[in-house]
Image (cartoon, rainbow, N blue to C red; front, side, top):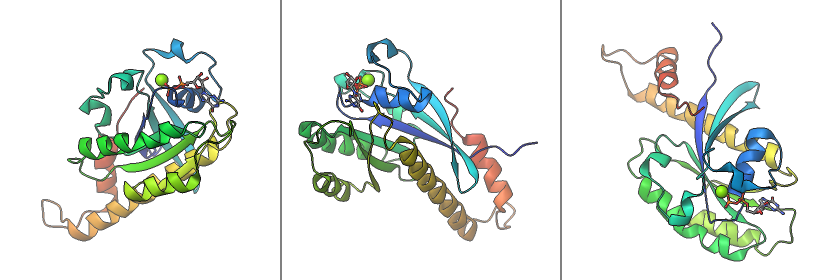
Length: 210
Ligand SMILES: Nc1nc2c(ncn2[C@@H]2O[C@H](COP(=O)(O)OP(=O)(O)O)[C@@H](O)[C@H]2O)c(=O)[nH]1
Ligand SMILES: [Mg+2]
């Protein structure tokens, strides 16, 4: 039987209008959706990225417009491996307001078994920039965000590279976690866990969104 792909859940967050749904459709269909209002109800998709010869499956969730009420449910974050904190490079307020989203992620994921990977994504790189990389990097340092990326959902610029970097980081973290568990956790019989056994456990728990 073919080996299952490592699977990770990513959720999109950020102010209304920064381009989350456009990014979602760019990742889902590889195209720019001119009218994102038609997206209501479509909130989850998957894409497969090749990293170091291994196929990684990313399940990506969009807010489906709920963020305007600031009432993201706990379920939205459940089993999330990474959060894409999106702002618009053409709108400095959207970067400033990302701090409250970063805090919300910390509050909502405080009980997660492993820390969620926080990634700052500057969208609309095709427009004139009204934010600086320095400000984004400062925010990243303050809130423990490990990556700062720039993309355009409209032109597709930076998208493939962003997916590869994110998938690579998630894969490396999951391997690292598995290694450290192997070092520390014996199984119920007192034997050290083998990689295969741990692997199967993680695969059973892998989120399925689509
Ligand atoms: N120029 C440009 N416009 C974009 C880009 N991404 C999204 N938009 C536009 O920004 C507006 C808001 O996008 P949307 O995806 O609905 O934002 P959301 O509220 O964060 O989901 C729409 O008019 C999009 O067409 C981009 O990369 N470049
Ligand atoms: Mg939207």
